[in-house]
Length: 85
Image 1 (cartoon, rainbow, N blue to C red):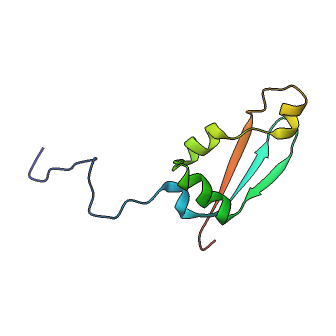
Image 2: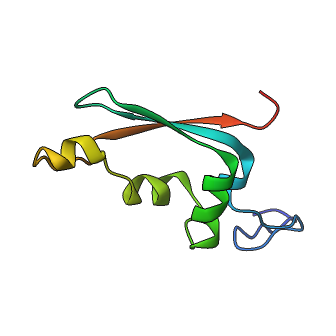
């Protein structure tokens, strides 16, 4: 490589959880159509519990309506809303 070395492990910027970029996250169950919006305080709770990314959050979520009906309840989609939008 010529001259400049790059490291993917370290940057000069302060690290922030991916979830901190969003002011809200809309969640939709793709099986029953139920929707919910995670508000900023709910997002902060997930970050405080060690969930820092959308993938990590997705893995934790389920649809309570589908679960009560005996389904797997893991077919959910996330729609993040960035700060300033």
